[in-house]
Image (cartoon, rainbow, N blue to C red; front, side, top):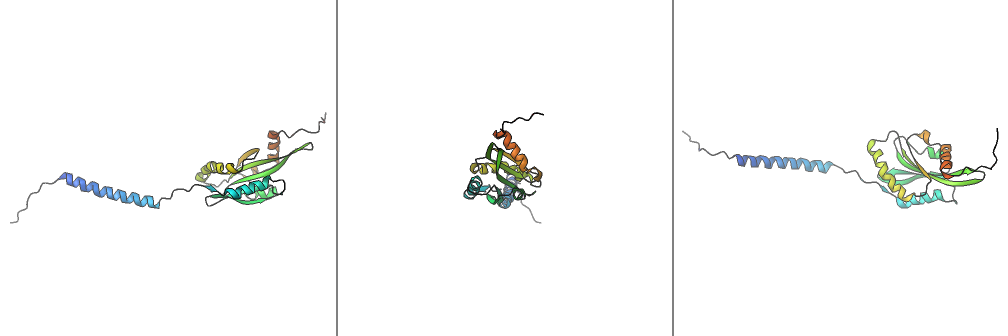
Length: 185
């Protein structure tokens, strides 16, 4: 007959090994999760290129009337510039976030003034996270583009209306003096 030696079952040892293996398993799972997790990258701006586009629009010696800044990956860059407002309107898509800088002339026959507008475009199909980042990213743009009379945040192409912009600039800029002739009806 085989005799088995009675051994005391040590619950402390079992708890130790249970904790050791579960901690090791959890640690391994967390390490794998962290390895596969990518932290969203911060947006940067091509400052020298954006400044050149900004100065081109502001310059009286060029015909450039607008510039559009877009995202290339996580970097804001000048994407296009031009003279025709209709071309400017075509730069904005429903899936894009971008920034526009426009040169407009306001006033009447007695007082013509050049004014500038900063536009933040967030297309209708832009996701929530990208919409939220626009607020922070705009501060990068505003560090370079500092000279503008007013700004607009727009998400619908019908809001890109040159006449509306000129009227708004006239209201805030004091450029509606007229000829001094009052017509009586």
